[in-house]
Image (tube, rainbow, N blue to C red):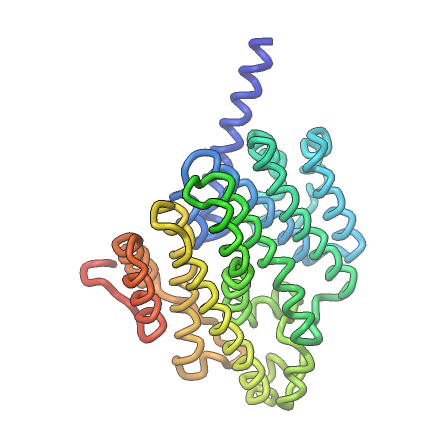
Length: 352
């Protein structure tokens, strides 16, 4: 018994080490944010985020036909409820190809499920519910567009964003309520009204900055076809010079949508109680980075041209991180910083 207990403890420690080591390779932004969350809350968000990345890797796998992707997503869902299935899952994806860090994570997803199983029952329930809904939505779109996702309408765009991002907003908010004493029933209800906007704003900004990568490397186009056609472009022309004017006009509509959702995201952040400092820190960093990215998308010459990739500088990332920590207890300071990041690059002297 003692030997088995020690083996279990050793594997849990290995799982947490692996999760924290692989995280920066699969997300620069959330690697910064997750580190500030304490205890089981930090482990829960780490496990949930990595499981979302596994699902995303399967959805984007370039060499897999749609039916194979759907089967693997079904198997991934089974892993939540059956440890033996989770332990065997790496064998199912041994031939997976794609971005190396994401492939490595997926091939060692058994360790992520070890981390998931180390959580309390109520916390596992939140992760299982919302990551499961994300996986189900991904499966739906994989089968709906077997030759590569081609979003057709704004309504369908919002549905897709709900599955891949809005679900995360609900997951995080339920975890805040579970683990932060300062977020009681009333605060939980209020935050839930804004949490979808918080998560989907970040998703829309990511889609806008990754139009080229998504189309050329993942065979996915999320800009709605009906929106492109309204402006004289189309999915077929999205990367062609001939359709550039129409593509930029369509992207501008999504920029306006991102602005709207970012205001909801800001409200979400400011509603988090000041006593929940780690949670405020977790939320402020991706929000500030999104404001800065959206600024560049709208202000830089030709930033919305199809082949332009927009990425804020490492120096600005460090500067916003530093100042976000400085003003985290002040709603007025956070609102000022968000407005400042949206106006022009925010660079702190001495930060390199």
